[in-house]
Length: 156
Length: 261
Image (cartoon, rainbow over all chains, first blue to last red; front, side, top):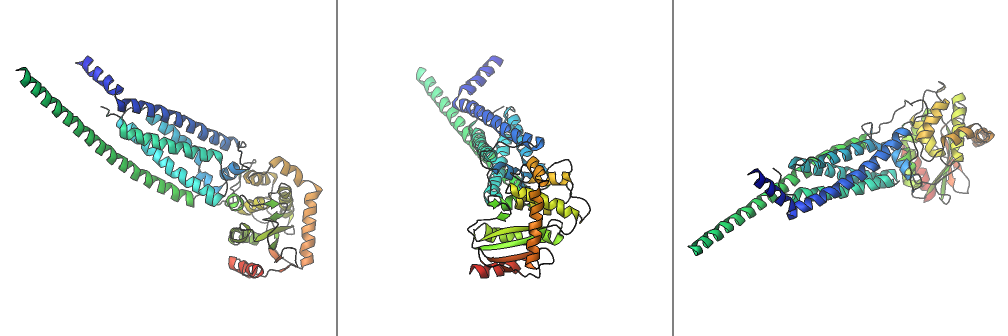
């Protein structure tokens, strides 16, 4: 019986939803790692008082030194780093709950990234390429994780 | 018998297929409901974050020592992307010029910078209608001299207006000796695009002291006796005193609008 059950699980993994789920998982893992890299770099720049590498003249510095760079006294970059790490952790929770949590956090990330992008355009009047990059990564993550939530095979 | 078994098998297969379809449809419905739920929760969380972010970054007058960045307040956002050259803010082609005579220790200058200056920048400087010039004064006390020289050094890096705005955000008690090298460093660290080491070096140059002398001479020539005082006029033309009785944007915009008309 155990052997039969195991075979059934393997068959489910090889099914179309199982294959798509694994591919989406890999894409999400790569995107989350890129996000961790971007947010980690901005956190390092913040706490080391280092000059941020920026191809837009002082844009990153202007954004990082604006009053919107902190949320309740906490650097937004640090919040972003924790967000990406939490999404990364959710990818290793192989259950419905893990998929739900990952998609939910990515959706929050997209919403807040959208707000930050609006601030750059309308209030700060400067662009930070790292922040825009992070917003793009978070948007892609949300698409991938929502897609995964909808198509993945049921887990026991 | 064989045919009956085949029919039974077919019926069983059909039933199983129907059950699978039903299960798949149920799962799809459940997941769409879950997605709707997390979208709603995410929207609520984002709304809370936006509210915190909008009201966040409250200004503080306490400046960290040791060269750490002071609170930059709204200055980087307000002045970001605007041309600054020396003591001038805004386009050189702007039709109207406003000259501000200010002392970095003067609390009313700080009030002007927070209550009127942002409106003028957004309404006129950002639209290319007005350029502003700064004439530094240093008569309140020794801290005014130190601060004025630091602004002059920032002007050399074309960051005088941003530096001065952040300075006002963090202004201390008059003549309390608060304008220390650490204080100046903290303001410089919060000013985007400003090199702290260069500013520190330039603060001690004769050119910085000369900027204060020149500001004082212009102040006396205009017949002013206090700060902030203002001259306004068409760019390149004669300047007249901009009289104000209260620090409200309207007091200034009326007179600028007359010149722009």
